[in-house]
Amino acid sequence: MSARIRARKLPAMVTIPPDIAKMSFEAALAELEAIVKTLEGGEGKLEEAIKAYERGASLKRHCEAKLQEAQAKIERISLAADGAVSAKPANLD
Image 1 (cartoon, rainbow, N blue to C red):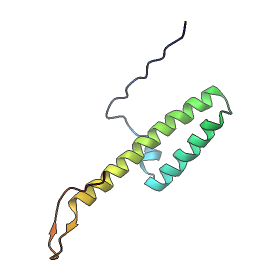
Image 2 (image 1 turned 90 degrees about the vertical axis):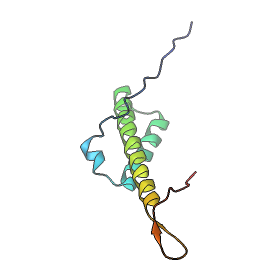
Image 3 (image 1 turned 60 degrees about the horizontal axis):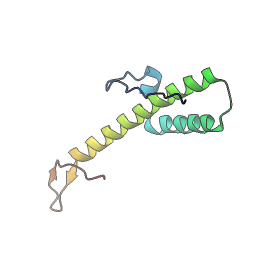
Image 4 (image 1 turned 180 degrees about the vertical axis):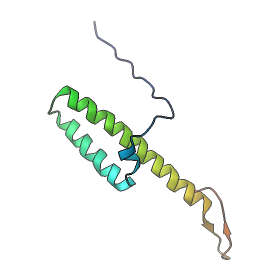
């Protein structure tokens, strides 16, 4: 008989810790990469791994928010061939 763990969905508006909210995209991504590398190594205590995972999840949300902000800026700023500035959505997909 196997145990089944269900993933919980986090609320859409989860608060990002203040120290992470102050980070640049690049700094948050670098820390997230370091956490992933550590967790993939499988070393350390369970409680430390859980805390690292939770911080990593916050860093991921922060990076996603920063990317959305950048996309919104790109969508707002567009220069036409004739030099006219307009707003149109970016096609980043």
